[in-house]
Amino acid sequence: MPELPEVESVVRALAPALTGRSIKSVEVRNTSTVAGSPGRPAALAGRRIDSVARRGKYIRIHCDRNLGLAIHLRMTGWLGVKTAMELAAEADPYVRVLFHLHPLKEGAASQKEALVFRDIRKFGRVWCGPDPALDGLKALAKLGPDALAIEPAAFAERLRARRGRLKSLLLDQTFLAGLGNIYADEALHEARVHPLQEAQRLSNAKALALHAAGKGVLERACAAGGSSIDDYLHPDGTPGWFQRELKVYGREGEPCRRCGAKVRRVVVGQRGTWFCPKCQRKG
Ligand SMILES: [Zn+2]
Image 1 (cartoon, rainbow, N blue to C red):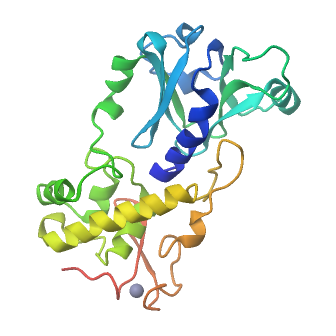
Image 2 (image 1 turned 120 degrees about the vertical axis):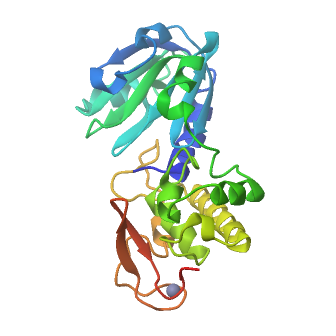
């Protein structure tokens, strides 16, 4: 499932392609994709896209007149822009929602004419409506501070105030927005902290180390265009390459890249969790 770096890569690619473009019409091919929208998708016709942003793992598109979109890619969602020729040639059965755009210049074949939400498994969501209602959607309203933006002292203080094991806490989007299974495991490994460590018992120095590790991993992954594991691809169809840099995630039985001990896998809160039993000890 895409995490902060993958969603950030989508936003960085789409912002220049979409900002300033106007939506001509909205074509919903699968109604469950837009289920729960606080407004009618068709109300976006005629609106100008002012910005493309990220909140946690959500993509937020802001239009004029305070209308917009909130999008979660979930398992197999893909967001990108296509030319009219590409759309006609592909006849893609997995396209769930199309936002047709007003052409910038009449008759230019190379220009992108639609924002496309494609989703094989149909778990992804596209919510349409007024901005305040989108930000007020239950999942968005409850998001904690962004994993890339939170300051070290604030992170350490939040950890101290919470009960629970670190791995579960890092995945909790109300605690911290943006981290998922891959980058939580990588951050814990880099900080040399055990995933089952009780948050409240973590020393301040370790909490600060975990903050620095998380930020570092996320920044390097953003620069690499995220990790292409399972289905994630950039808006232009190319993969990210951070999966090659992963130190523990998905590497059960392989040597830790720091100390050579065998990487272990345990299940925490129903999620596979990879760590090095030698580098990451409980304090
Ligand atoms: Zn190790």
